[in-house]
Image 1: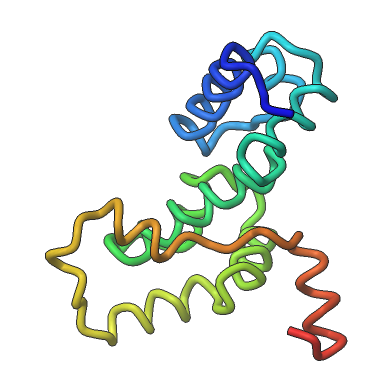
Image 2: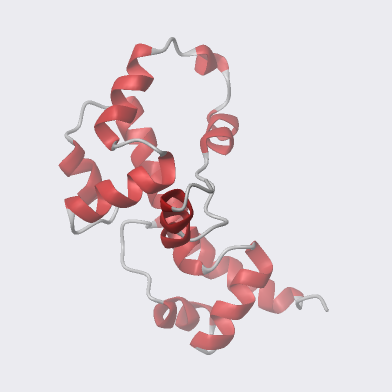
Length: 150
């Protein structure tokens, strides 16, 4: 069963709000209000439409932005964490490492040590290629890594 175009437009409105301000808090209730639907219905339909629950989608956007700031600026990791919506540096570092496989400092050092072959590549292509894979929950990735399955 497909989703109605009206519902998809409402879901896109909420997705656009998250994309425009990923540093803000976006609880499901607030997103549902933007979409003019109930919170439970919003969460279910968002996942059906975009393949990820709203929280994971927001994590993807935040980590994507943090990775770009680490690569392109000399800002301290603390400032990057705060600019991308994290209130705790420890949580930012842990989740960043879980998703990317490296701490923010390690990622910055590794990216600066490599020649940048994509300098002529459009930014949208680079972002897509470097987008974090959050099809599995972060906690599930930790469990799989601990069990030696990842």
